[in-house]
Length: 117
Image (cartoon, rainbow, N blue to C red):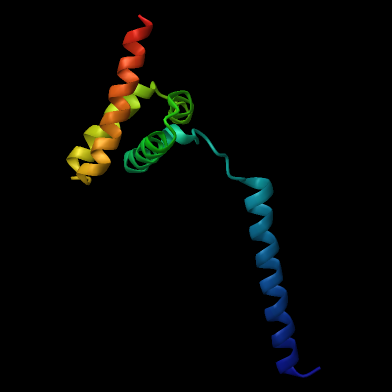
């Protein structure tokens, strides 16, 4: 074989060996271990957007039980979640219509909780 052909074969083998070594290391020797992943670990801005979406759905559907179930997805108390979202939304100057939706949901939730006591 020509010298140029050997170079190509050696290059291809080096690429294959490197690829196989990388896969072996990543899958067998040191695989990724996911820890503490869940909706409660999402950044506060995404949680606020989620609460806003729940408030919009509540406005459209009027189903408080479904809104509570959706808010439970974030893992914390729904009232705490809503209040944290409202605080963040105020600090980031969300639109007044969005704030109204979240505050309305918080008010209805608070009324429902006070009615249970």
